[in-house]
Image 1 (cartoon, rainbow, N blue to C red):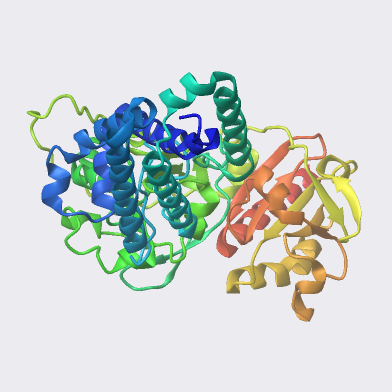
Image 2: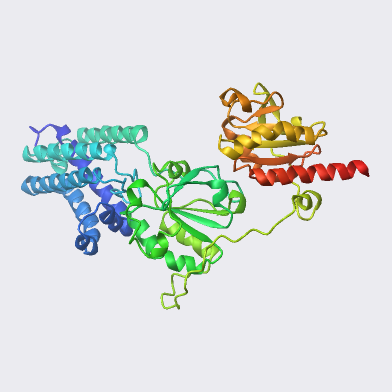
Length: 489
């Protein structure tokens, strides 16, 4: 053994470490391993067999042999490792040709889950390392032999290898991405999806007229398949919630026949998965939102989080499979009760006044001012836009008219688009407030475009927010009537 360089044990130890890590991670989440068989489109019979249960034990056994075996047994173990890593490489290369991105759970719940070209390169490196391990074993290298021959040198080589691996992991590696920040009671940032049936745009400000659970899912995703299998049970247990599935372009053509017919009812498209990326989650991800775009629960990522979400907000009980099946409730949007904005503006019990949030705008697009500074001497009506759709253009054009109607108030156009980017006919002559990145709009709960909110001169919100041109018109008229009544008194 003294004629065999000590460094030759490095590929053996590295392959053993990968196999042991992968095997233990798979044992900790056996369902994730079975889901990977589904996501990677391996034969259904293979996924339903004992293979997903045996795979982690096989990896652990190979990892142990690479550490303790010698001679031909070690050569055979190293060759089996090459074969296993090659099989992984082929499966990953095949998955990269699928229309949609899949998750492989190659290391259980650890590490990067999405199958990308990065995954292919990683597996190629593992194959190369395993080939070096075969060469090392054939030359007579082994960890027990190296320790017997020169323990200090062998331990030193292993320590340096472990340090190099740790540095690589921290510099290049990353674990699962956490969901985007969002707390119960906050407002969902505005976004646009497409209607799966007609292809027309569906804006978030019109999507959440009732309590709605958006489920971001994709075909071939094991956890998504389990969620879809429970779709009708969840809907039946949560009659006050509208369930709508959101898929990407690749899964859109596969909606028909996916689970029950109700899955395709009201389905939406997130073509390039941009909205899902903004949420920071993979599939499945659930977003439970109430009227006005208020987040009713933290973003739920994964089957466990989704099941907990439905349990908390419905009556779904998974432990009782014998329970009578209840027909899913109809989820046709209910007509919201008519409300006079004047009553909202005037009735202290109907409108709870809260503090104006700590937020800042650029006055006239140049000078930074807080919202409280804007209302230091008088109340202010902010008319908010974040796009140039037809109603937003109408609202921007109406600011001057509303300013004439409410001369005692400060009426400003609040825009997340700088003034120079607006069409010339919409550029305000005065009283323009630029909201960089829409942070102030978000703080005020102005999720739709156009929206409006009334800020009081006493540091409290005085009315709104309201969304849509018609509601803003009514809101302005109600304020004008209230001010006129106060002046007459």
